[in-house]
Amino acid sequence: MTPHPPRLYRAPEHRMAAGVAAGIAEHLGISVVRVRVAFMVLLGLSGLGLLLYAAFWAVVPLRPGDTAVPPRRDIGQLLPFVAIGLGVLLIQVMVFDSVGAAGTAGWLVAIIAVGAGVIWHQSAPERRRQWGESMPVPWLGAVVEESDRRAFVLRFIGGGVLVAVGIIGVAAVYSPAQNFDAVINGVIFALVGLAGVGVVAAPVLWRTWNQLRSEREGRIREQERAELAAMVHDQVLHTLALIQRNASDVKAVQRLARGQERSLRNWLYKPTASPTERFAAALEQAAAEVEDTFAITVEAVVVGDRETDERVGALVAAAREALVNAARHAGVQTVSLYAEVEPDQVSAFVRDRGKGFDPDTVEDHRHGVRGSIVGRMKRHGGRAEIRSSPGEGTEVRLILPISGAGSTTEKDR
Amino acid sequence: MAEHGPVEQVQARDGRLRVFLVDDHAMFRAGVRAELGAHVEVVGEASTVADAVHRIAATGPDVVLLDVHMPDGGGRAVLEAMRRTHPQVKFLALSVSDAAEDVIGLIRAGARGYVTKTISPDELTDAIRRVADGDAVFSPRLAGFVLDAFAARPDTPVADPELDQLTNREREVLRLLARGYAYKEIAKELFISIKTVETHVSNVLRKLQMSNRYELSRWAADRRLV
Image 1 (cartoon, each protein chain N blue to C red):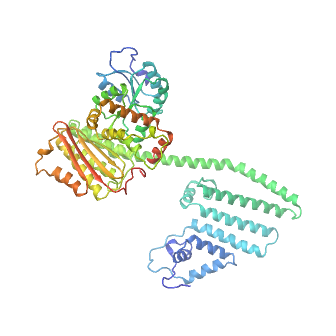
Image 2: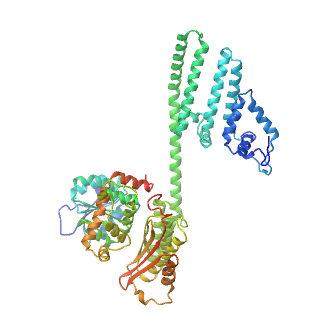
Image 3: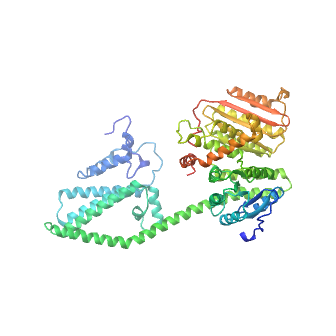
């Protein structure tokens, strides 16, 4: 029964009763639900499933090394299986000696137990918890709550079958079996009765449901408001306070205002991406750093995006250096940065309308341009061009050919 | 709020451009009015959509500076209400938002340009003048959005390529715009006249407005806006 290696153990961390089913499922590499269903089916053979389970429980050891306290048994999860098991056992009993009204009632109870168990099991655990909080009777949620389509269909069909069987059963019990008209009448009266129950119950159910929905909406709104308030407090109010205290220092005020504007903008409009993973995010981060350090405005426009790697990182670093140069030497308030990701190349352009210089007269010991921009691009298989003339401003063009993989210009943004 | 607006001067005209302000922030309207006062004539202002529609019709300005986000429908509602009845009025969006959906949305609704509120007074005056002359005004960021929206999709067949795709030349002009070039610098770079640059830019705008619903919805879906 316990072939080795590997041995069969009970898995206490996934246990519902004793971890037998979970252990077997793990051992055989199949889904635990299947194992449980198998036990349920075996229950039908004179309770064989229960006997087997007990035998496994007694024989199979807990997995060694699992010294941690196993999680508390989840009654909510155990319940449907108990119900289903009960139903199966009852059906099995009925098959052998079903007589008279008692037998029929037994059948009904059995079927209802199975149905209820299935419905309960189908519903998600967190939803059950929600019902538990918001409804006087937790299981009501299974009937009232809106949920995904599959669960709805299942519930609808399951409920329909239960009701139909119930009605026919009641009609059959209380009418002489040979009188078919009486059966029909019984069914009709039962239907009328059910409709009456529905009419009485519907408003209550509807009200409960509405109340639940509005409560949930209110909770979401409250959460959003709290998040916004926290952000405004942490950032905006502090920045405004700093601006008031530095009112005489124009540069400082501008820097604070720029930084705050940027972070608000990001918060409001931009999906966040990690600067270490995405090209656009990395470039925008570099631009933001330069803005903060040198109190200038960087008008960054990035078209397309892709993942970064070492070479793309080099392009970002070169662009950053170009921005720093523009901020230091051009003597302007605004620098534009444009980058584009195309299937076969990534390019970036840093442009200012500042002093400009004559590229031919740059001395050899100035490493900023030669080493950090031109050299870096060359090392990574790209190229850098610097266009500048005194009085006309400067533009640094960085171009990096790439293979098509990794580009997300056209999709997935 | 609207009752406190200034007296509108309907007819006076001394060659200066007549500009109308639509913005729900009174402080901002006052600031723009002060900045622009020397160069253009501010003929009226409004803080709500209904008020704006009513007064623009009454004053007949050359250019309307339009805020995007307002409580009751925003600039888009004003544009849609005015476009059919007053086609001669030009709209320039002036917004604090430079989110892609706002920019492209306003342009598609019929605005002739889009600038952000951090723009300098001189640039704003220049933008108003260009819009009044029938040009389109593109900020670098707007050019970037358009390039993004029309990103080359060689694998996708387009219903009407004449209408929906940008020509290489237009794309080139947009790229230079996005790189921070002025119109005359673009003309110099591409060896074409300024007038040609303006034509290309206007064509891009026209294509943006005329692009079909399918294109728009895909554009929005690509960016997870819907």
